[in-house]
Length: 280
Length: 249
Image (cartoon, rainbow over all chains, first blue to last red; front, side):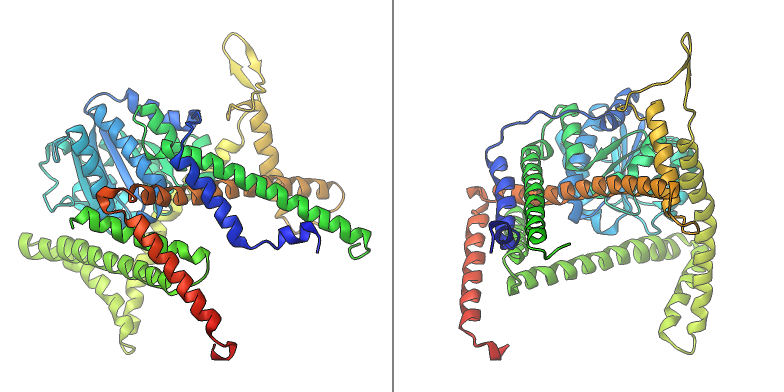
């Protein structure tokens, strides 16, 4: 058996170990690689930055704990930015399995920034209907969410003063791990009720959202942990995403090296086979 | 033991049990997997019951007298007739209602958002009229709206569409166009795969970050103890499997 053959038949657990070490070591000993801000992340940041104080900002946390490592840091950075700008924050989720996590997240950032529930922000929770709930909110927010997550009637809460429907929202962002998410918010929300929309998403669905970004259907996109790290840098409060960037870069280098090596071994085996007349 | 410490021990244990699958399938992985499925289904059922049945149906009807809600409740209840074979035909009315309303809401919106808007973006003018400069052609690849990118997008869309047009044999010039389409598709798949790798690595980073955090003495070092437990169990199970004759399986 040649070296190339031995390498291509290597125990896959060795590869898992290499990837594991490439992730673990930079987390234990960070080097602080520079983070370049992409125009799509800056698009979201700049829009929030330009919003006047007291503007209505809707954050839809459309993910569950399975996507927490990517979208939780995005949500924290966005909420910190919104609260710092004294925006009125309406948080909600279209994913029933993410309700508890979303409530904990919003409450944690609000506490950290000294914001009051009902006055500065409200967490509406989850309501059934998926995409249909967006249409319903576009007609009347109070029929979709008669009460907030804690059962308090939404009507009369100071944070919702002058807000009757989605038409009164100045900026909405959906942090999505799938459907319903950014696309649903565009199709059933922005396209119909004409408010500005931005997006945040997991890396898996990011390529599918770039056509919406290019055509201006969304004004910015925060993609994956990388996007979260960029937003944390913009907000100036580095957190878990920035801490994970060294590990991300190291694992990417490891994967690229493994792909290149596998190809070299594969082609060298093919060459040997040709020479021996096994492959024509 | 307070809630955060208990949470740290549970999270650490389940993470390590799931990661133990990378070595090989084992009972610890099975335990964590079944717990995940059970807890997520249970959580969804409880939240749906509380939000839908209690807060959106029972309370408004009995406390606020919103009798009109009985209409959607009645239509929704027809779904349950699926369980009674003699009355199951009634469920078709509920399905018809959902399909009708769903299609009516979705079709115009989807056509507007995905087809019309995307076509509009694909066929942008090649030259731009810049005040003072007249008609200009921009070469900047990094600017998504540049003239060069407009040509690339036009080429990509046309060639990929041609690749999926099977009524004409892909020979001669057609073969070149179809090959160009494949090239664009490969680039798209590569970008999607790259993002997927990034996402999966992010998940690993998330779990490892938690494991590092929970190795802290303030939590009672669950990472250290549970890692020892997991490794010990794997060694024990491995030894037991090796001692079992092949016929026993």
